[in-house]
Length: 223
Image (tube, rainbow, N blue to C red; front, side, top):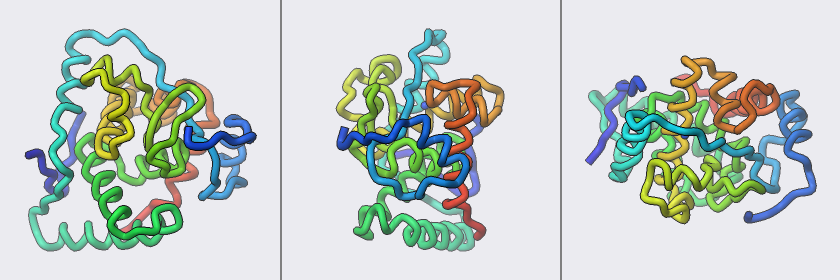
């Protein structure tokens, strides 16, 4: 069973339709004009399928293969208390979208686990989820991206078992999304602007990265 121990970080990827255009939403979000809890369709682009060398494909496949439950472990009491403080603060902020405590807890625990496992900032992952799906588990974009992190179905064929329906499973979706985002950031040598654009299929364009970075402010936390 894969477990995460703080503060270890790895070093190292339609419910509803709205009349609001994705571009106008992203531009307004970047300017701070869009409500954080905007209802409507997933504001996703779509990762572009690109040829992967065998070593990269193997590494990505390995990274998503272990589906052990996200059970955090801590090296000391203070680390555990810091996590619990984070969980409490994030739970309060997420309540408007997920009213049930147990649902919020499982979601946040999984986000924390998968982001740490992939070597990502949890704040960044939450901001990305807000922009991509507005925390809707079964969100589907106009180009077919699925779930919380709006993962394109081709990824299940390239690095998974080929079953795109699994992208509606919470941990599977978050696992794929975090691994893919880590892959794109590595390809861009840590450049967050370019890595986020690649994740969205809009590499080099500013609306999407700006929207994600604006959204992360809601999820900032100081233990």
